[in-house]
Image 1 (cartoon, rainbow over the protein chains, first blue to last red):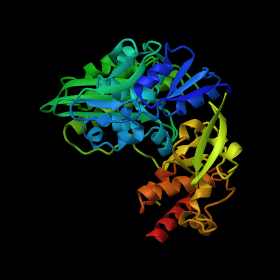
Image 2: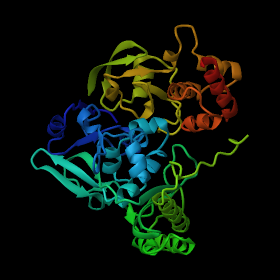
Image 3: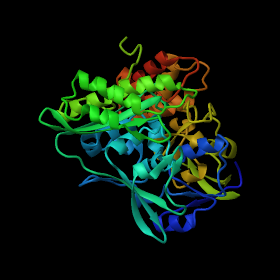
Image 4: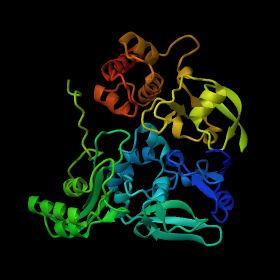
Length: 303
Length: 155
């Protein structure tokens, strides 16, 4: 660390001008990922452009599709009634990021542009079919589906000089429900061992549409066509859920690391995907299910 | 590259000169000299460095100091009113919520923020709210008792 020039932008235009052609510069929103990465040996570039004072990037607009400004924090997402009601999987995810101190600082824009395959908000955004709006000084705005934005661990298809301004999450048809569940060793300051999001739409008792996405079992967040095919056309019964688990495990391409080995991740992604689909179906039926959908196991709390 | 800035900590304006990548934790401890805020893991895991930025708890070890310019920062020293301890500080003393004491400043800041947003928390709500604050002495039972006592004292 050391010898870093710090700039604060108060408008998007000012940020774009400070970012310039994108060489030797890093944009910082909350900064929590950035500092941890810098300590881990990934040196900061010579210039840091802080965008946290750009008020225009703070808003949540749920009047039609959901538009989340790049600076919307996890705390903002969890406390948004619109998100909790209509895009519940995203609230499930933001509710379990880090601790309350992390959720006050960490932003949706930082998550999306850091492109970690373990980010909690990633698989919910994928099942909702969300897009990133990237702005450049020369080219104006372009909308990129997140499936195309995330190209590898920590890598995106954003061009140098482009700035993420918002994330657009399409609204869902009636009788839809969603959930995000992760496997965790502890509740706070945890990163998903594996995680899964599901979004389903019902026609009567039958699942007519479903999307399932998997967290921390591949180089990017992954859709699971196997899990999706297993639940569409069913009522989400036990046999369908067993097939969802098998489909998710088959579609996963996990690695072994400090937190879990490949075989364990492949086995557990099935269990977690099954739980996510099950909660999404129950919510689509109108059942109340707590947010976050990942249960708290707190030994001693019943004393 | 040093940047001249002013940080507002506990209601006082401190002129400082900071590197662009200096953390808020290092600015508070090294440049301003308020050492109540502790360096624990220094990696956003343990909560020993927790302070309030515009009334919201943040881990100062992973917050760029220059991003806090223009915000009101409150450290554990700022919870007391002069020599008068706040209700939460007194409760930690009364209930034995302090063992080695290293996590205490972060615990106090975290608990203070909890009681601001939820003046009458259940034990489970307290434990969830403090779950980003690690106590190596594992003194959680008395810490939770202290937070409940402070809530009662302030009711």
